[in-house]
Image 1 (cartoon, rainbow, N blue to C red):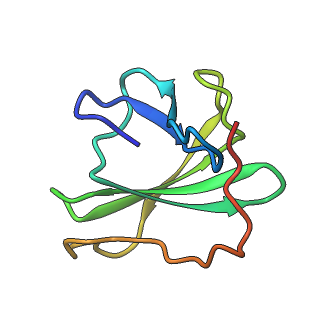
Image 2: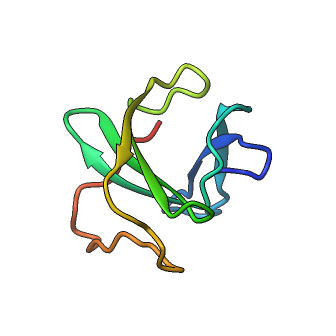
Length: 103
């Protein structure tokens, strides 16, 4: 997730009780101002992340290594062709699919 202060966090919700979210900072500042993040598993231990800026209707693609707090490797792949002007963006997946790589 991102914040208005341009920070990037991971959030993990355990599947067992007490199901309290575990929130960890990945970047405390200087992260992009995206209103939507869409992610998908990528390779052996990474995540493909699409950040969507609603103000400009643009999307930027990143690869993110396995979550390791502020040591998490993030590599920018550039701006994605096309426009993202719809008010809602989502990733639909069944629960039988492979989970994202987290901590």
